[in-house]
Length: 509
Ligand code: ADP
Ligand code: ZN
Image (cartoon, rainbow, N blue to C red; front, side, top):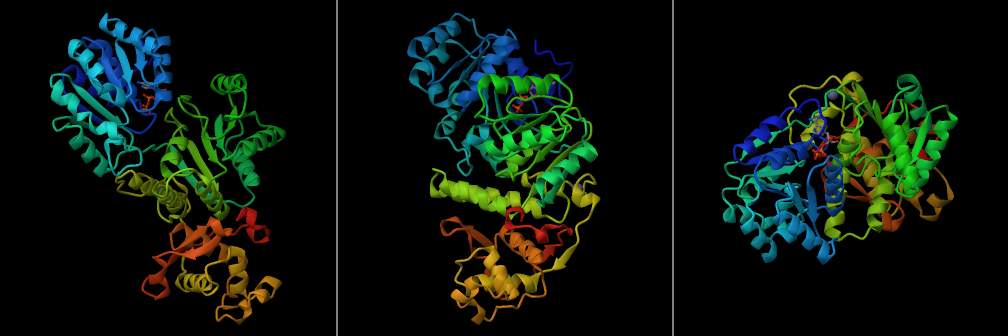
């Protein structure tokens, strides 16, 4: 039916668990193949399987894909007109459905429960089960009510699935969904064949070109950029450099997008240059690299996007360049977004975790897996930190100088001016603000501009400083800076590899 030659590791066990009528809790990374785990039991067991899914768009995509395979699937959500919904309910009552996708708020309506009472379901699948977690990002009130399913239909097996793995969330899912006797299936997030590499931005196009020419001259891959404009420019530029590159973003006409996606899947050696709009449901096994020219907003996004490389298990590269300007841009986007203060604070934490991953001096894979609460005992040997160990230096004194420059200038200035203060530059802005009178003026001559930029970048990445976008990128002290200023903690900094960035403008910091 699905056309796959074999199951992926725990799929078969999960399926047989459900076929025996037992419950399952599945933690599997995105792209791991969760849907098959309930789709097959849904087909095999008597009755129609009910799949609870919070995302209307994904529901529609899945159902359409299933229908094309000849599976009798349908969905019920608020996008349907009442008569459409009624006709689907009738199909269900007449036993013409094997899989029915339902939005959570709909499932618990009296009308739906009355139908469920008549039609014993094959199973309940609860997708995106982390939505029950009240501490999580995607909390959905309706998900809390889903434990009622078990009380009402104790004989129907349930499967809860999520890609959010941390131990606390896992525990919460089991408790709140009343899945106490469920078998747990934890699939590792590790993708051992992907080599993680993160470098400082220093003429990003030149860096990308070198990477592609040296390692991926004829390979298929994806280059992610933050904006549509950058996608278009980069694709055009790669074509000029002799690569088969195609742009992909939500601003292109639907048929162009479909055409580029099709060519990427069918032809060899196509590079797709894309915004994050590209990737959902892309299953091309031989993507040899994923490159990021801009910093992803979260570790989850980074993991998902890089995870599109090397699905065939052969060596693949996840390559990223970033700089302080990325942080400032993302921060700006966040500040201008519509979300609540709580949402923005959460997003800021998530961005900081991504920065932390960029700045680690130890194994990247250990850091990445630790983020998903998965221990990896030894350094992996297949990331840039492992392959080319990073030199570190005692940056305590430099950090103190930088932080006190921020403090003494009133937390109102951006990185370039602060470096001018530290290095004792005599320019108009310094004199206008009387900054040549400060005790910190000129104390930092021992480091050059590039080294100071590195110090500031790392202080931001570690949450000692924050960037205030309402004041044009002014750096402000954060609580942990206090201990550094008091001399209570040491600051170990990474030694940035020597590049040509000293000559460059802040654009490439
Ligand atoms: P998830 O929900 O875990 O993100 P999906 O269920 O969407 O993952 O599956 C991810 C991709 O893997 C899909 O494109 C699917 O076709 C493919 N897939 C799932 N199971 C198998 C399998 N046993 N063999 C090959 N491909 C599979
Ligand atoms: Zn490593």
